[in-house]
Image (cartoon, rainbow, N blue to C red; front, side, top):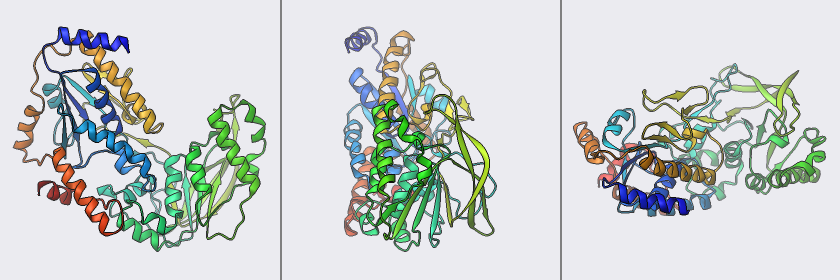
Length: 461
């Protein structure tokens, strides 16, 4: 703490130019970085660019609708956005409406935080069948992402298979199995609510390559599934052979979730409930079978090898099994996109190339765009704070403020030439008010606008 008070005094003493900082992406990484920079630097001007007319990124479009408490961070982000030294620049897309080179000319610092919004592929036959739909698209469908609003998902079948055992996978499973009356109280999109209300899906499998000790979902999400009304969790006891032997060696968080799974296996919840949640371990997808749509999946049985039982790798045994299903949902991770062709991009990892968050002089990356899709919002906050500290240090050490920069005014001139409608924070507040009013008519906290042209219409009203 003393170190950064010293840097702040040194900064104020040496620098007469007001730093102009551009943050690309208005999700948690962007807002947390802005919040921290405001504390560390004065004076400062921060402009937060967002490709959509609405802010909050992952919090708005990624957090499950039945997790409203997680969305409370929006209150903190709103305070940051309303700071006199912060400007929200909505409906402006890096790579199409503005280039990285233009931003470099206009700002002293550029921080890229636009997240990871592409899905990793299974890479198996049948992945392109209708009703093999990526979890990312289903999340966008029920959370109001404009490009997922018209998703064609057939819920007339009895059984869904989800490949992956992270929190996104378990979120999708829970939404598909939740009582409709509970979902009606959330901000789930009306089109998703209507579809789920007539869904015939009764059984959801959650399939992972490795074992219970390597499952990526957290204890909170697992507890929710175990307590889900009208739903029974059915484990395969064979998947847990020898697992209890490792309990004494586990760190407390992993030990708690493993004990919870073992307890649930032993209890063998009574059947008779309408729906079933069936986690399966030690299985990899080999093929999706069907004709006009999904009919089944072929799974390969795995065994784990390696000395560290928490980091063991899955090796195929050659044994296969077939699981009949009507819907397949791959949920094996996210990757970022290369928003501007001049950005150094790691195609394999799906992230911006960087060294300790530094991409180039004056150019930085934070959040999933730099780390990959790991952790929860709290870990994103830690990363954003760390990158903000690096930026503050570099401003003095790397002499990033040698000349005045035009900032948003310079970019705004280019946007006017393109006849772009820029959405301000005040414009977003109009959208926010409209959505809450529409939600109130339906007894919901919010009914999200899912059409960008409608967002811009409301913003301009």
